[in-house]
Structures are given as C-alpha cells and as structure tokens.
Image (cartoon, rainbow, N blue to C red; front, top):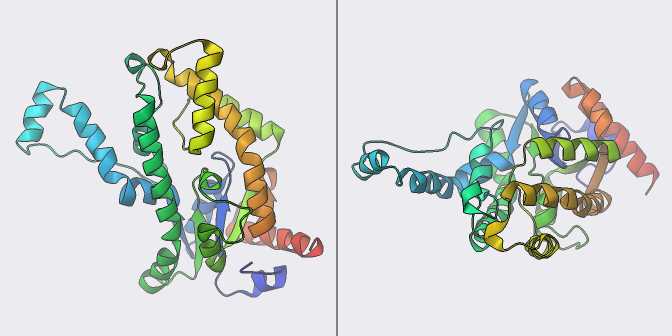
Length: 290
C-alpha cells in the first residue's frame, strides 16, 4: 500500500486516499469535509464520467426528447436554443437519467438492448475516469498546490475491477498513487439503503453477466415480456440483489488492496483531523493483522 503503516500515513506530507462503498455510506460526505478544510483536492469519479466521458451522450438524449416537441425541434434545428446537462458533485441526476431503466416505454423504460448499450458506455467511462486519477493528482498539485487528494469513487467500482487479480490494471494504477479505503456498512445500513432506494429508485451500473441473469430471472418469475416490465419494480428488485453481490467484492478490494472503516465511525467524523486519525487507527489494525 502507499502508506504501509500508521506512522507512514501520519508522517506523510501529502496524503492521498480513494474512498469506495455503496452510495449513501459517506464517501461524498467525507470528500466534501476534506475539500472544505482547504488543503484537499476532491476528485469525483461520477462527475468526471458525466462530463468528460458521457456528457455528449447525455446531451444528445435530452435533444432527442426535445426533438419530439415541435417548438423545441424548430429552435434546435435553427440553433436558437442550447441544451446541456447541469451535472454537479451533488446532483448526478443527468447521468442516472441517461442510464435509464429497462422495461415498458409507457412507464419510462428503455428497450433492454439499448439499456445494455448504455451500461457498456458507462463501464468504459468509469474505467477511463478511474485511470484519469493520476492526471488529476498531478493537476491538483501543479495548478492549485494541493498536496492532499481524495478520490470519491462511484459505487460501481467493484463491478469494473477484479479485486482478486494482482494484475488488475485499474487497481494496480490506483494503488500506486492512493490508499484505498472501504467504508463498510452493516446489515442495518443495508436495510436503510434498500428503504431509501425503494422510495426513490435510481438507475445504476451493474456487471453485464449479473444484469442479464437478473433480467432473465425477473421475466421468468413474473411471467412478463420485456415491454411489460415495470422499470421501477425491476430496478428495486435488482438493487436488493446487488447489495449482496457487491459486498464480497468490496471486501476483497479492502483485503487485497487497502483498509476498512466502519460506516458508523465515518458518520461520526466532523473534521479532516478526525478522518486522518480514523485512517491511522485502521492502518494500525491492518499492520497488527498482517
């Protein structure tokens, strides 16, 4: 690891970490806290995906919808209006909206084949955005004189890497520049995440094999055709399955490539100093167990 023990971490003049976990367990909370301390650069992978790599696809999707409205169609064709997403660190809705949900088009669904095409675009975008981290580490130093750096990962990072492969290209690149930190939730957190998702089901990225398997299983269990699927019902059902699918992958990332923080401990931090101390404790525990 970049910081092999607590002493190396505490003494490092420049601290660089990567936070990974399911969305809703504190990655962005900690990242914002560190940024607001004034000495940390915050790199949001999801923001990078939605701007650099998926921005054109997102805008084109908006334009496609606008072209169905005669007035907007006329204005677009005459270059009288400009359509672009307003994605931010806190509002990633344009990216989620583009990913979409498969199923009945009358309920806002997209054909499964199109859905998988968008998923594939997201996969490549996420890998590219992760590999851009080194560029942003250098950029944050040379442009803004930030020595400390936090990479706020997408919740789906575990879907695009193989944590059990010591030669995984993405994890190898990241481990050279960052300390990987898993924010681990327990069963209560999983239940709360599921309840939150049930209230507001949002599109997500999944591994192709997992998604195709769950799609076929859902169609069979419910006795429906593709265009009869309620998109929200499908993504709600799939999310619960994804929680169980992702947990061992996150655990393997932490075991083979980094350290673990408990989500409850992370929720209790109130300053950059608190998170630095929490990571120091985790590194001490890691050293004692290796």
